[in-house]
Length: 120
Image (cartoon, rainbow, N blue to C red; front, side, top):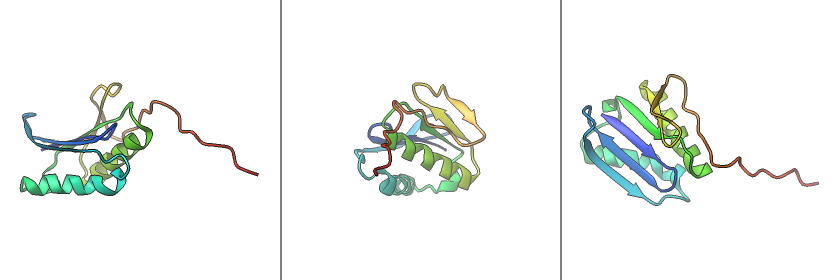
């Protein structure tokens, strides 16, 4: 089983079998609560299809470009799940090229974060 996460704009989660056939998907506009609801969406999709996290063989995540917070949440979640389940994580997206990463996946942002100078 493969899990695809795309949080670059809206949140899209897709489950595919080992032959790359889509089993199920869910999509939602979680722009302001992705970090709170993304794992719950993954759990709901797996439960709906009578699967558990241990049935996942790898995770593919959109590494960007996209919204800063969206990409950060998606990449962090993918790395967290891959580490916890001891499965490979792949980067996909406009610049990812479907490369496999043994170490955690890195995000590619459209812009650097806007961080202001310390106020005096």
